[in-house]
Length: 290
Image (cartoon, rainbow, N blue to C red; front, side, top):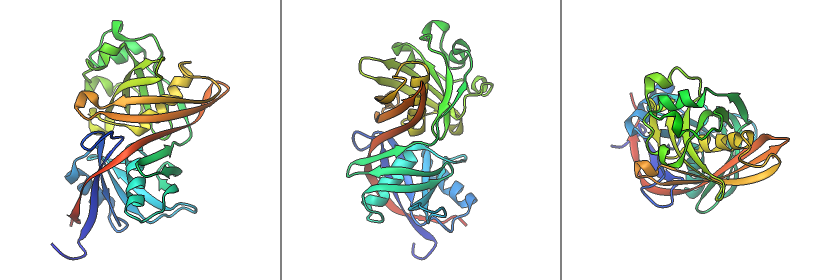
């Protein structure tokens, strides 16, 4: 296949401690001329949780623009597509390492790229009351005895998620009921997690509405929102910057590590970051859909 109907792409594993772990991402270069329908067709062809389409920026101060698609829909923002896209641009020599400015549907955000991965600053924190923990647990195949007593909140730093705190052994027993979950206002999905205060680590599984309530192996946007939830519920400090870790994807055989910070002022989150490693695993050329 030769000619202008082809685009270069890479597959990278994001938030991955090694290759073939973390969350796989397709990164398509030079996607400016693609229509929304063409982007959606390519995302469905790759059939990964998300595909990043790299374009020239349109906002002042931005270094590049990214359009993010699941196999089913376009997203204004997502964590692993942002981290993976930024690191791939730097590794390919298209941008210098350091702080790059990403334009996306959530605005222009800073991404700090180093040799191994990247750190993403989330958008403006948001917070809303969530459903009763016992009712949300039931929609995930869990019982009232499984919940920890920490309130459910819908929190985000770009994309909101609902956070259901459960005991450790319940996390891997969660089985989402899509019809039941659609009755709740939980943003983009639900993070079912168990919090270990001693290590400041959450063991989490994330079920995303835009993946038809399927499970995501590593969700940067949910890890950012977790910081907002942790501050709101008193599990992290009400002032200053706290560090925390999210372990995800282990139940799927794709272990992921998301290293995060949240900065709080007067008991509310003011900002959050998420960092992860990016490992390239494949590259090629793909035909532009007709």
